[in-house]
Structures are given as structure tokens and as C-alpha cells.
Length: 435
Ligand code: FES
Ligand SMILES: [Fe+2]
Image (tube, rainbow, N blue to C red):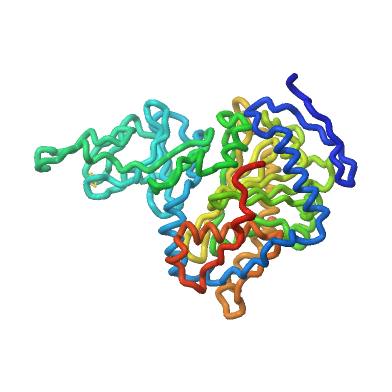
């Protein structure tokens, strides 16, 4: 029977009536997974101290936020060895639609081809490196033409035209295609990866890939996107998204009123990914800003009555709600400045603009973001001063440590100066999957 399949009393002392529904979609978030997640929330809410075997986390060295050599290692080994969110298919409305994406420094051209695939190449002409496109987005009719001398490529990147070709002695055009960049999709979300050795996207995402199979991903549309430039190292802001220990002090008048930071179930996964599942304070609380919005097929009580916030390593944070989700993407701009992309997605709302409620919802969200951002520029000044000797993390903040451990593994521990490393201590606390 579709619809309601289980009614449980989830005894957390608040006498919640727990109702969950059969999944119309990918059947992934079944009752065993949901029960385990909620039991974890309940355990966190009632525990008196961290698990006895949990290690005291070593301090995070301040140089990881300031040292130019360390940032250089990140550029070479983190950003070049990760699957990174680069766009949504709605940004490619027709064949020949393109987008120039350079969030990690390399100019990458994404283009929709005649088979409606999204292809990615370096935006680098094979003649002498001219840019193939110069606008950040646009549409070409059927060919990509380098404006410098006119070399021409088809939408699959093959070199198909060279002016005065007879003057290039022995030129084999088949060897001069645009250099491809790996490009794979999760539903309509487009990811790129510059490293051939990294696992395919689904494998890389692991449990998070499984989770998203619950939803009709091909129907998730782009609502809006904005970018903010912020005066801190990207890690400083992103780390505020990894814990809810700051809710009471930072978000007292907003998020703290409806999320219970003590009831937070953190799951650390391989590859540095993680989940932070935080329960709403009141079972019957519904964000007034989302009332009237369409619920995604496949949504469960996990999204309805909790805030499941994922980190897709390294820099994608997404708190999923039944009516949609933002992607918060933190990128380094310089060693001490960053860009934050805030991109909203929602289930297909049909033709026309998104629901009018989205304007208020995104503005409210930005007000909460401002509460996080208020500290970070000054925090950057602090970590650059002699007053900062490293960050000490508590058990609730363990996702931050997990993130840093993975960073060292990606860079290669031996490449990192000893005083900038974080000891690898969380191994046995990292899960392989959901159960
Ligand atoms: S650099 Fe592109 S045609 Fe010369
Ligand atoms: Fe926050």
C-alpha cells in the first residue's frame, strides 16, 4: 500500500507521534535507516558526555588557515582531486548553451551538445591557448570558435576547422581536440573533477549518492543563485556550517528557536563526507516560510521534522528540507578571501517563475547567513595574529576535525609540514554507510 506504512511512538520524552510514509521514490530511506538516524538523535539528546572511547581532538593548527604553502598544497591536491559542483542543467536551456566555470582557478567550459549531454573542457584553444569563450555564459549555434585565430571545435570538443591549415606542417587535427574535464551528473546537478584517478561520482559520493536516490532528481529545478565575496579563508566560514554548537550564541533569535542543538546526530563518512542531523525542538513546528510550498516526492520525516545537513567533500553543504534545498559552496578566492555561492533548488513547480514565497524564504535564509558571516573577517584577523595558537574542538564539532583529517589524506600527509598536520585519530568513528 502506498502512503502511510508505519506509525510509531518515538519515545524521546516529548511524546512525539512519529508517522512516516512509504517512499514513492527511490525506496532508500526505509524505516531501518530512519529509525537508526532518529535513535542517534535521541541518544545525543540524552547523553551526558561523549562516548568514553572518543579521543580528545588535537588542536587544529592556525597555520592551516594562513600559511601560503599550505594553501598551495590545497590548490594542487584538494581542489584538483575532488568532484566539485559546477552547475545545474537549467543553466543550459538549449543545445549550444555554455557556461564558463573557474571557481578553482582552471578555466573550464561546460557546454550542452547535440545529444543533450553536458561536456566539460578546459577553455583553452589547442593552437596557442586562446580562450574558447570569454563570456561567463551564452549560447553558440553549433560550433565553438576561438576568437584569436579562428580554430573551430564542435560541441564534443573535436577540432573541425583550422584557417590556413596547409601552413601547419603535419598537423593531425584528431590529436588537437579540446582537453576534456571529467563531468558527471547527479540528477540535474553537474559535477566536474580534474583528476583521472578519482572514483566515478556515484562511488565518490557513497552514502550521499544513495540518499539522493530517494528523490526525483531529474525534477529538481534551479530557483536562484547568488554569490558573496567574504574576507576570510574559505575554511573559516565553512566550519560554521559544520556544527550547531554556535546556535545559542550566534542564532539566538533565529535558528536556535526551532533547532535543538543537543539533539544532533553527526555521521562521519569515508572521503570526508558527513551528515549533521539536527531535530526540530517541537514536533509540530513547520517553518512558516515554507507552508504552501510543494513537497518533494520521497521526503520523509527526516526532512520534515529535522534538519539533515550534508557535506559533500570538500565544499558543498546542503541542508535538505521537504520543499527544496540550498547548496552552500565555499571557494577560496585568495588565501584570505573567499566566495560563497548560495544556490537554491526545488521540485518542479511547472511553468513560470518559482513560487512567490521563495523571495521571503531566501531573504530569511540570508539574514541567518549574515549572523554567521558577522564574525569571520575579524576571525581571519585573529588567526593571522600571534594571539591564535590553534582551534580546540569539542565532540559536537567533530565534523570539522573529520574534514581536516581528510584534507591531509588528500594532500598526502608527508607533503605537509609536521606542525601543520592534524593527527589521524577518527578512523574507527568513520562509517562506511548508513547502517
Ligand atoms: S589560440 Fe585559438 S586559434 Fe589561435
Ligand atoms: Fe550558523
